[in-house]
Image (tube, rainbow, N blue to C red):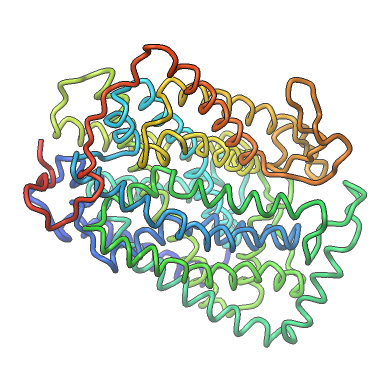
Length: 548
């Protein structure tokens, strides 16, 4: 047991716990018995709060352990996170403004609320809601993977229930203060999380290269290790530069991930909690600064190679846990007191997004499943109560997921989550601009994209881990089959499955729309107006926050 690290971790964890409970009285409303207040923080967060909230939401604990771990294990392909987080913000700059405005004008709390209002279709809204919840669950579980990696490095590496007990305690605390304070809790804690993360990463990228002989030594060690032959596959472990077979995968994975980023319910929650359009403009312009941090962080994967860092063997599975690479690097290279700060930064980095994700999933369940299909007459107080309970269920469902299932499987499911959430792009993002696509065509496109995406993912093996199915998200073009036809037979060039599934989704949606428009099938009633997409915080006759 690493006692110094553990004590510092507990102290900082205690600080954010206090902040979590204090948050209920921060920018306090008359009461939290309304989703506008509990689930969206009163829709009044300014530029700085939104910066930390959205940044804390998108740059998660899993990001801080998995991106450098991917470079540690596979090399250059792990840098896809950089271009994807850079291009995401210009792509969504205008759409998020429209989403904020129409949601503020109509009182929408979730992206499925918008789809329900735009098309008058409870079924399409249900599809978007369920897709969002399913895609979010493994994402929450992955925050636990990051937190467990830190706990394992501090000595909590027992097998069975005992090994998961510290994780369970942490999430009981998280569940209680999120239940009480709603979105205000992760918004306030995000300040502490980001300050700690910036401190740790900046120290790491300056101190560690100096200690290890400079960046030339680090890149040299990385090239030697990655160019060696992996006995499990008979091929090199990876490359420090992209090769001819993975360049297309890199580009499509970066673009697909960028398109998916603000389709996730927790990203939309951060947007809708903002005070106005100017706040979002400033944030979409400034958030790419996080990508600088992410690039520096990714390089720590190569630093770990040069330092000779070895991942800890997970006593529950008997296999090395690649997610412990960065915690072990910090453990071996930093003084104990600073390693404790670093562990707390990663641990708190798990709590912020896990809280926001559980709130976003609870909002979807409450608004678009519970109220729509089980209790149409639910009052705002009923909705808030249902969302609080649902957020508890979601959190402990994610904990159970980790306890019962091998965490490596959860990591594979996160890849599936990206493919899943991309299939809502036509219903949510395109609908912000036009209703040309028919609602039944959107349902058909979603079904085809989802089914084909799952079929392709199922057929991808991972020889390095011995997994025959769901072994990754990169598909060789040789394996791309359209009803038995292989248009790229013999090509070993890889492509991101989510991108292929989205193209199929859009093609089906367009073709079915063209067919249906020759009939008299209704496209539903649009309750929004053109003016709704441009309202701002100071407009006259704007719907009051927390109005019934």
